[in-house]
Image (cartoon, rainbow, N blue to C red):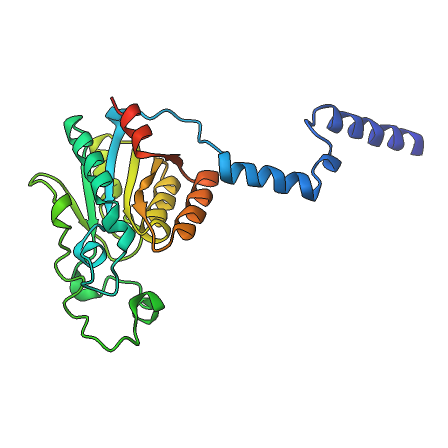
Length: 243
């Protein structure tokens, strides 16, 4: 009986390794870190970008983040990225790809925000200035102004899908792919990318039509998104594939 059990265990072991692409011993610490590094830096999502199935999201390119020297929320790199974003917007309009904007504004007396938002360092709670004029109207920077028939999503938090009708709008438009541009790369843009991914959308993240405070933060977030959430593409690559 013991010999039968031993033979059975050996058979199972042989069967397991005969169908395994690599033995467990193949995944040394050095090997798994090498694989991870390559996927962060060079990984590519395996899906096609079909123009007819795309919508462009322009995330938070409003005065508070783009207008130079006006608010503590200004992102200088976002201002510098305006020409590239404008080119992408105009290209999408020519192809009848919907352009959807998001902004922060005074919705529901600000009661729709996460409760701890005012305590976050990102809101500069200790800065001795009157902030009552910020994030009230949600005015998009003039050089990227929406057309009359373009949708503006007034959102209460980082991600464009949180407590907004964006998912329903995209589904009603018949779109399964979102192209993400705007600011900040590592806050609202990346949170939106994650939320889109979790809802089954294909995500294209523009590497040079998004902006963060610092280049290293931008690049770090790009690498994370590349590995697990989005197809990372330059403006020129996006323009080329959208025909």
